[in-house]
Image (tube, rainbow, N blue to C red):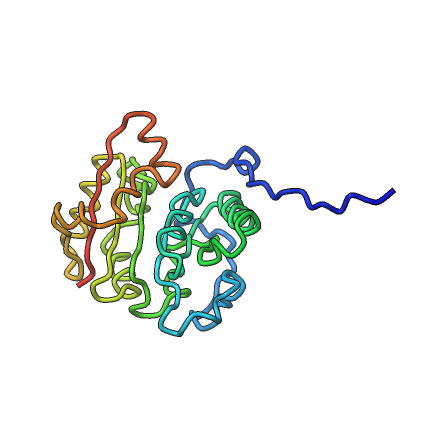
Length: 240
C-alpha cells in the first residue's frame, strides 16, 4: 500500500485566531526589535526576490497601520514590480498579515513576493527603516481617531511626525489619507495644510489617481464602513 504523498492545499489564516484590541498606545514602550540604521535591515528576510531588484527599486510604498493587510494585497496586485511594506503595531494583527502573505505565496506561486509586514511603531522608528527621500507613497487608511482631546497627541498625523514623513518621502511623493471620522479628517487636512512641505491635491487630481477607488473597500476597515453605509473622507497630499 503506497502512502499518500499529496500535499494539502495551504489555506489562508483565519482572523478569529488573531483577534486583538482595536486600540494600542503608540506612546508606550512596547518591546520592539528595530535596526539602528536602515542599512541594517535585511530586506531579503521580507522579500525573497529583493536582490533581483535594482538599487533604485528599494521599498517605495509604506502602508502605516496596515491592519489585516487587505490594502497591502491590493498594492501587490496593482504594482507587481514595486515593493510595499505594511507597518503594524499590534502583535497578533501583524502575525496575521505575515501568515496571510506566506499563504498567498504558496497558493499563487510567483505572486505576492513584493509585499511584507513588519511589527513596529511607525511613530517612533520610521527613520530606522527608511533613508532620506526613499518612499514614493505612504498610506494612512482609517487610523485610530483617539477621540479624547488628551489623546490627540497619539494621532498618527501631527506636526512633528509630518516632518519625519517628509524626510523619508521623495519630492513629489504622495500621502494618502482616508477616514470615516469627520473630526479626524479635518484634523489631518489642517495639520498637513499648515506644514510647508505638503500640498493637497485638487479633487480632480484625487479622482484621477488609479489608487483612489481602491482606498474605499480594499482594507478591512474600509469594507466595514461600506457595509455600515458610513462616510469616507479622503485627502491626498503631495510632498513638495
